[in-house]
Structures are given as C-alpha cells and as structure tokens.
Image (tube, rainbow, N blue to C red; front, side, top):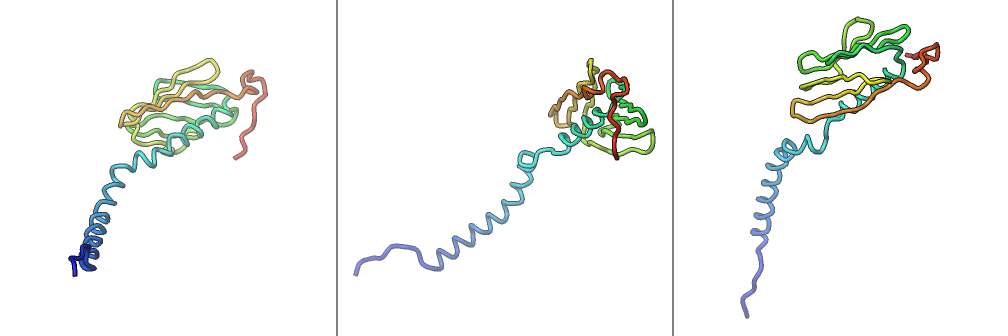
Length: 148
C-alpha cells in the first residue's frame, strides 16, 4: 500500500483550538481600536438638534464667543462652555451637561440666528447654522408657544 497524506484528528483539533484561543484574545483589542470609528459620537447631532429646537421658539438671542442665551417670551435658555463641557440652563436654575470632551464651543451671530461650531478634544470639528422659525422672524406676536 502507498503512503496516505492528510491530517490526523488530533492535528485538526489542535489547530482549531489554537485558532480559537487567538481569536478570543484578539477580539477585545479590536473593540478598543475601532470603537470610535464604528460607533461615532451620537451626542453631538443630538446636541445640535436640541439647540435647533430651542431656536424654533426664540424671540431674542444674546451671543458671546462661547455662550448663547436664547430668550423666549416666557423662558430663557443658556448654553455655555465650562471647561471641557457645554452646559444648558433654563431660567438660570441648575444646569445639565449636554456635551462633554469639548475643546471649543463658538457661536457666531447671523442675521436670522447663529452659526455654531463645536471642536472636540481630538480635533474633530462640527458646525451647523441655527435660525429662527420664519413665523418668528417678525417677532410681532407670531411666536409659537412651547408645550412642555
């Protein structure tokens, strides 16, 4: 009889066991290196959406470089940078942290609102315009009352 070539059952099981051990050890490291790329920051688009909603009810704005006060007929909302956070206050009572790991929060006034820039600590830059609702631009009683 001739020589038979191939793998024995023990060789196959041993190679699968080694492969399984290597995969189990590598998986946690893959998550560490790719988590920012896969997940991304979902809090910044939510922050911009909340800011734009507050603009929908704005009557008047007070804008400084890293601070904006959105005034409604009855309420006032303040967004400002404190250290590496952006905080939101309603009627000068308490505050909530709406964004973290922020290097720069910059608000530039525009004719019908503002242009908001957020730069993360890692250097990524996010920008968006935010403006008054068209029905509010005249500011002659065309305001929409906020229902909370």
